[in-house]
Length: 252
Image 1 (cartoon, rainbow, N blue to C red):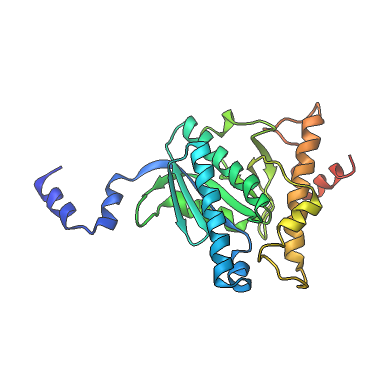
Image 2 (cartoon, rainbow, N blue to C red; image 1 turned 180 degrees about the vertical axis):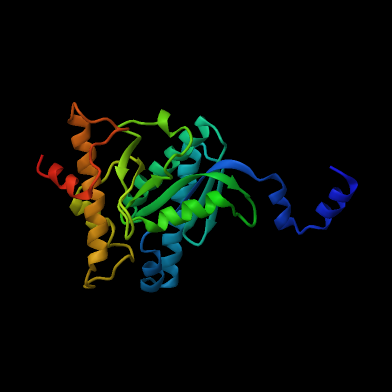
């Protein structure tokens, strides 16, 4: 680095200096489905308790999975891992813990994992951040999907970890992508845990959007059950390419 470069770097705001060392990483983003309703429905003390539950849950998942770099922005969680197979494994384990522990505490989670350049710090940004955000908000279920073509995902295929699946979307085209496998509760449990603790008020009418997310989530669980029993399906070559095809597994 020249003296001129050093001088320019010294004059940079601290928040921008991180961009000098932007590297490809794995990146995760997720949030609580219905958090805005919690804020509207709960008094300040109860809301603080619910936020504490979420923070403790994320921290416990971070420690259990070995993920070190985590940020909170409101209820949204960012996590970054190194560009390696071990880094991806840790991020997948972190995501699964958030899904399974989260639903148990009435914190339904939707998230995405991407790969690319990430500037990590007080201001976190980069292509991987944008890719993960776009993928996360497009989904219409409780679950995690990965960006198509995610590096090293080919070594992760398993009925207990990652499968290829048509990710439920709110709009847009049907597309197969790597999806995280998790233990989805039974439908009634899922319904109870997505309508309690401030997510909905007692007596409030439930919207079709809520029901659609539950149906897509349970349909995924049924599809995984079917796939495990089948001799003709594999996690990396799931036969279902159209949502209508998935309806066949419900009665199987």
